[in-house]
Amino acid sequence: MNIAQLSSCIFIFCYHAILCTSLQCTPKQDILMVNNSSDCFRECEFPAKPRLCEFEFTVTWWYTLASPCIDCPDFRQDCDLPQCFTVDGSRRSILTVNEMSPGPSIQVCHGDTVRVKVKNKLQDGGSLTIHWHGIHQFNTVWADGVPMITQCPIPSSTSFVYQFVADPPGTHWWHSHVGVQRGDGLYGALIVREPRQKEFNSKEYDFDLPQHYMLFNDWLSISSLDLYLLAIANTVPSSGYTDTMLINGRSHNMEIDMDVPITVFEVEQGFRYRMRIVDASFSECILRIIVESHPITIIATDGFEMEPVREVDALYFTAGERMDFVLEASAKPSTYCIYVVGIPYPVCPAIGAAKLKYKNSPTMDVNCTQYNTEHRGLFSTAVFNVTDKDVYTFKDTHALQPVDPALYHVDTVYYVVMGASYYFYSSNRPEAELTQSPYFTMNQVQFDFPDKPFVSFEPNGNVDSCRTYPGYNNTELAECNNTHCSCPLVAKVKLGQVVEFVVIDDVHIINHPMHLHGQSFRLLAQGFQNISADELIEFDKTHGIPRIPPESAVVKDTVNIISGGYVIIRWKAENPGYWFFHCHVEYHSLAGMAMIIQVGEEEEIPNPPKGFPTCGSFTPGQEEKES
Image 1 (cartoon, rainbow, N blue to C red):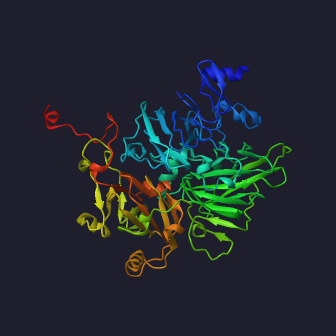
Image 2: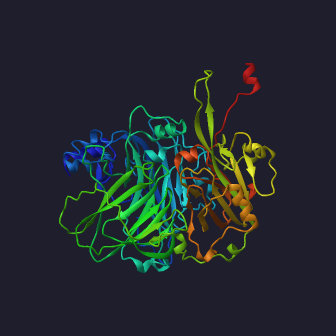
Image 3: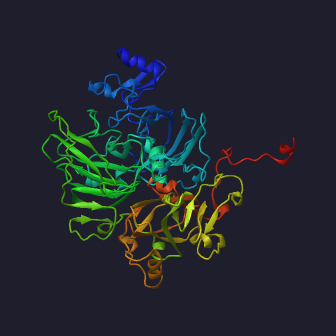
């Protein structure tokens, strides 16, 4: 061990190369374990032998290309030093977990109990939560990580322990659900494997390596809060900013003259590799992924296996979605580029790249800044019906999991219309123009978080909310067509019912990737409308929007709704709780495009553990006023 490594152990927390405790330095594995009797990343046993897998996350702010980078990028080896965040060469603050961004990957087996202690050490005094995107949280709704719905945000200088069963299996991820923290680096991979004997597509690949996941995130040279405020305030910045698509926290920015390193994935010729990809992006961009000279085979979406779609050259997917594909290392041993491009341009200018390197191939200085976006076969998650014969969609495949027979009958249909409106500003000067700033709605209601969580030992009737469900006459919501309504909108679903949501975009500006917490659904329709939302709803009630049968549908928890489009999703409401349903474009959700789906009556929803934190508004009593 050299002096630099020893100094790192004494003064800073370490990652990448070493894991430090006091003066004891040992090689660091891909996954950081705390108080674990054995390594939870393993070949998953059959029959299953679940384990307790414990982790510790310490969340802090840091800065990119700061003093720990020493002489990076002039001396490339310095770029891999502990606490050196190169991102795309831009300089700004970044959120880290255990001084990593993206944070540590959690990789466990299906059925394991995951226990994560999150320590809030944010220097700005801010609060946070962690959402485990894709985990159903059956009987643990309190661990879903949505502030003021399933828990109080974790205050500064305190900790909170999440505990849940790793279910369902598949490619998932974790991220902050407070404000815009996800866009500043607070996210990471969550991979739940199962025994190869239980996988439908296990014969499609040879290796499923822990390092073969890709987290895509759009990185701005300004803070995510600045971007959000610029959008909702409908204004322009005093100076320009850059936008890059990071892959596992690294990429090139062609507007910055700095040759920082990018992420490299290694393969060996003649083998097939399962690659797990996550769209962790902050904005509304659809991502286009191309692996140079390597067609891919799509085998799973949002953690659920599907009939393979073969010989695809490019993949389109949206924020919150996950896709698994098989890459066959059949090209000439060399180094190739992995391109990621935001579309549509110029609304989505972000681009990025990584490298695919063959083992033992000659080291080559490959230029991955010349973005090659040519492709033949394309798989798109954006919409079902595409006229191009070389484009495949979810309509061309189906889930491999058996269909619950109950899904052939629907108990209740909900119609949800996503809209947008504006705050208007005027001046007393007659010549002054009227200005405006946007907000978003679902069923004419701008979502507003309550002042205390729904998940609590207190009766939830004390939580101020507005409720809607078929047959419920809410006279207050009836006025929302004519006036601005803002409240915690709750749609109530009976436990055990088969529910169908027809979700319609009436904004007609950009895509909306919608994520449902706590359950997965069958995707029965994903199309475009050329009539109004009201006309589409009436058409569905009288004639029926075409739906594919459940056995022909994929299983997902995040689905894209194209501008002016609609989706129809169906699931059996078997998981009691308060589940967030929202657009995964961060500023759309924060500006109101969200709602809560309450599954079950209050008494049917599991209570949180004893001593669960409480929070809420406070007003002194009359005796304090008089004293």
